[in-house]
Length: 295
Ligand code: G1P
Image (cartoon, rainbow, N blue to C red):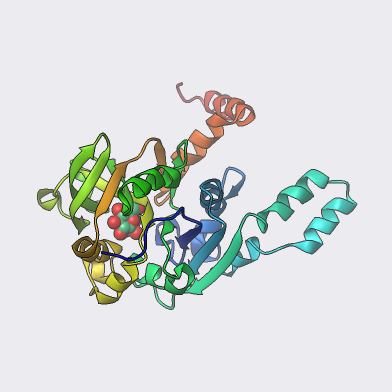
């Protein structure tokens, strides 16, 4: 058993070193995390969620070509001053608010060796504390935030908690899948995990989504894993080792997910987010009507 007991989570880790190959050529020079979803880069949506969940310190595990993420979260005094000079105080506040969202930290992942390897790069930052792990491709619409929902389970069971969703059989090979026993409605005690199984080998249809609340014991496990599915160091394999030391729970979260990891999902996310905004809603509906598409 870990010595570290659960305390409310203040730190969030964002792995952002991926190459964004599914979005090439758009991601040739612009990191996927910096591409715009409605009015902000994708990564800003994830950071807002972490902040709304009570996190005050954020670690980006970056890689080659991701310098613009750091620049985005740094103060931009010249731009703010220029906006103020022009009387655009609202915009100045908006821009100046970005670096004040949290304390930002950076680790560099030399090579994209997998999610497990990326998380291990954040060991020093987490300094023996429970932490939130946010995969920004999954944009979550949930109240309270998914991280807050995971916290409620972590507090009750004093354990790490994974966020899961039920997926179709044809989808299981895209995700980490858990074997689990339901202990209360929507809360599962995890018994085993497998990364991206073939449908025939999947122990259930409970798929891990991009929010985790992890005990610091995960780092010891990450150091012991070997390359797994896809030749990468898989977080799921480290979670299997963690299970031998500590209890692990999964929560069927309450809310919905927009999968910005694939083009189709990004387009859907743009439409869904636009429809949520009263002004943009009108524009989208008008554009669809005018294009001759059926509504
Ligand atoms: C990663 C994890 C996988 C999880 C998924 C959620 O996979 O390895 O277990 O289900 O994130 O998005 P990736 O999407 O990086 O291939």
